[in-house]
Length: 421
Ligand SMILES: *Cc1c(COP(=O)(O)O)cnc(C)c1O
Image (tube, rainbow, N blue to C red; front, side, top):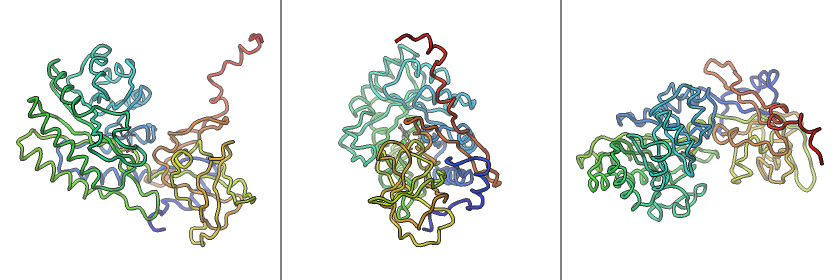
């Protein structure tokens, strides 16, 4: 149980609840900052290193501001995400735009902001040129296909919709060069929630080798290698977090061998991790509404899968703590459910927990990435508030909960009487 320690006490949560009713997501600023600093520290050897936080993981401007203050950029994949970075006053090469199946409007916005554009397909070169013009700097997303095994969440690269084939990369950079593009980047992302640091080292090797080959063949030079996201987190107690120093050390050795010793120009290493940056530092706090016993025992929470979809979507494990009962024996087996009219609305199935009662406070761990952001409104469920536990212990609301009026705002009830049936 050691690793799953909470950065707050039951008493603190009770005090928060007197102002902000459950359910809500609570983020730990300290944890986020410490991890961001560790990440930067691990890649100190690389001049220009930058992590672009994948904003889909937790698109909250307050969290973005904290990360930007640590030198992070933002990785966006949609128009709305681009507008969010703009609202924070971000622009230029602080923003990476890694999209796929992209609209003209999205490319235009990315160009207006001066974002680094990462193209998903060779046909998008012409599309981007036509609708927004080609920037000086262009990046391509590489899909290594059969060269690399995939992992569970993202699947096999060959079955993945993303990126260029190897041949298309050579052809694509040639096209860019002929069109006068001067600055080049390369990107790949073939893992999601991967805990093996060697996986990222092997991926770096594939990308760096490719950079060496393409540079030589086309007589161009690369400014950066974006190694994507996908760094996993220890959702389970027995998982070990990715050792960033080890991973960085492995990448550094390859860099020396493949880039420096080949006389290639220095290259910036980028990542666009989401999950690892905020995932472990978010908690979904919920109250037990009901205990039900039929063929099984159920803990019914006031949160549902609209607050956290991962268990229902992927069968993902999220650790659960019943507040104040941390020291008790976990000898009762429960399904922990929400209230959606969907039987897969469960946060845990056959989970061993201490004897739990109505009114108990339950903490679902590791909800700081792909938690609130994956929320939805099915069954008329309203999305919860997001709160931030600040470094000084203060709690601030960084997004209020939705109201029923928010939910109905896209409907025009005024025109209903005049609608004849
Ligand atoms: C989702 C995504 C990321 C972030 O992935 P994490 O698993 O959250 O690190 C980065 N880049 C792209 C292109 C993505 O789609």
